[in-house]
Length: 332
Image (cartoon, rainbow, N blue to C red; front, side):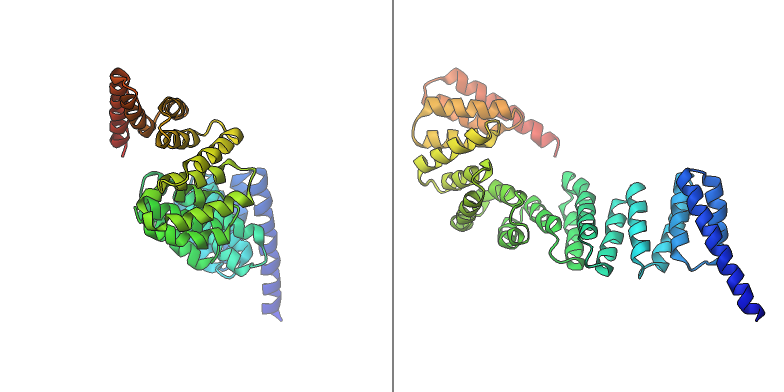
């Protein structure tokens, strides 16, 4: 009888200490939170909830080593608890540990398959975690993280699509093109895979006719968007096909989205093919105005001015092209 009373008293004391610690943490009384949550942890050291709360308390107290230890304890004890995993995800995200937040949220999503918002949060966190790696061109590390993420949560759109980007960054162009149909099946209305595929048409010449049909399908499904017209025209340019069709497509795209430099560049390329050099020069100049960092428009302008018999202008554009290329190389 006595042991039962002791256990009942301990349970009541744990609940009171845990509740008091959470209230203190919420109102910002960190010392009281640390005292009460520490007491709760001593009373029930295998309760992962209290270790999550202690991790947040220590983090707010700038005691990072203790916070890390408490979070690790919570992870170890709370693998089967959706509540603990979602709380850990919040703690890791707030403390700047985005990848660990994504991993915790992914585990939560496996345990809570009907929580669509939780799944989207896991996806978003993984995507956020790899952005610095992509920006630093550490594509191998990004691919490793995203491959594990997609294995754990099959069919998550952002990771699947970001793998296309990483393949592109590693110059694995055929892998990116091969993956493309699967990616758009997962998220058919997301623009990113189409945009990135449009960047490396020159590296997949055998696949361009197939890709062109995908662009046409996107254009027909989204006639209000400039992207479909632009990519369809770019694919025609890549194959040196149907210049008048490409011109009409680009004029539609520009009517929707006039300040997109790629549309003016591609229209310049079409007009160059049609030997309408003065008009081509205007479009390449507009592309260079909208994107002053892109050397390609200046290269094309130098060739156009040579054809127009304007050597001084051609020389100026060659010099600008060389300067911009050197600037790009310097930051790689």
